[in-house]
Image (cartoon, rainbow, N blue to C red; front, side, top):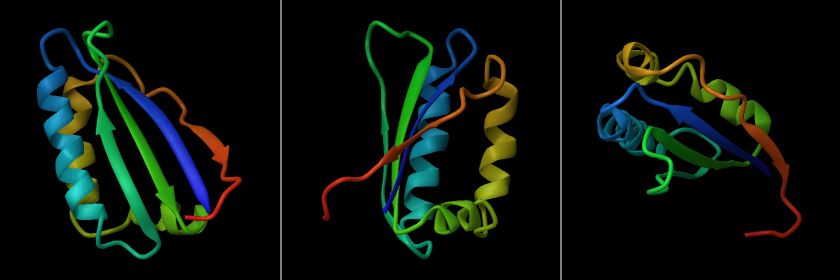
Length: 98
């Protein structure tokens, strides 16, 4: 199993718009090979940040998801409202089976 946790920071006032794009990605990715879950969240004290937690069968499944139909379009939609580059996600070793 491959778990990735990441944080994306939106420009001021754009967090909800970014979250909606990522929620669309979640729906899209749910059908990708090896996808277990893609969770989008926010923390009230981080007014511009959106958090994503993804679980995949393998890292290769995650990497291949970037070529899943529609994913590139969502990435292009999100880029103009990001405040800088997304923070590199943390790759987490999964210790228990689902």
